[in-house]
Image 1 (cartoon, rainbow, N blue to C red):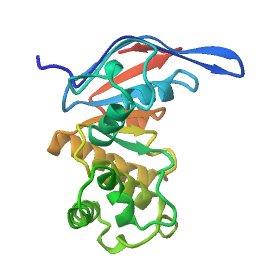
Image 2 (cartoon, rainbow, N blue to C red; image 1 turned 180 degrees about the vertical axis):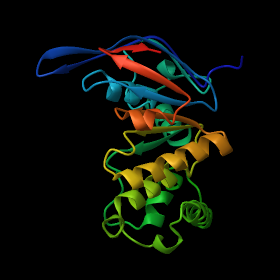
Image 3 (cartoon, helix red, strand yellow; image 1 turned 90 degrees about the horizontal axis):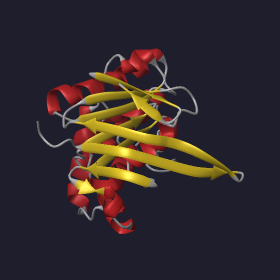
Image 4 (tube, rainbow, N blue to C red; image 1 turned 60 degrees about the vertical axis):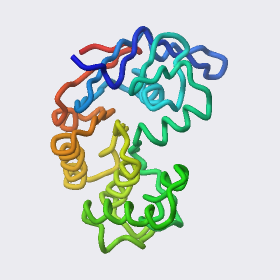
Length: 225
């Protein structure tokens, strides 16, 4: 079997809230192969957001082993982690996290600016993705001029514009109606099935998790499945 794109062994994460220590992750072991579509479920307070932050290199583990795309995350400094976040992981959030006074095209271009890609290539790559997701007539619309489903498609295009090894989606349908949510999941499923993208979805919705190849359950900071 090939080397997993994500390998965690005995990962722990603690943080403090109001002077009270919370043990959010308790010895998590996780292995995900390239090209998998995995859903991670769990009740509120189970540690899903913390696990997402660790997977996406937004927050380092306190202890344990974490290898991402063959890199030892625990050995990386701040600048190296930022490069990993920008080039290896594409993020899709429940709240879209689009820049409000910026067009769809400019929102999608943003990761390429940080990566140092020249303006012409940025514009071309962003345009291709937005057209692919049915937004050819919305390139210059701001988020307030788009529906929730359209905003999430812009967010997915932005997540993919750097061709990341992993697409990490945190409750990607949480703010969408049923039809828009199904459209978003169709896109994620298509990216996995036809383009070989590694997709990880954090969700509390069973209908969303049912689209994945494998479902893992997080309870009290411990992973089952």
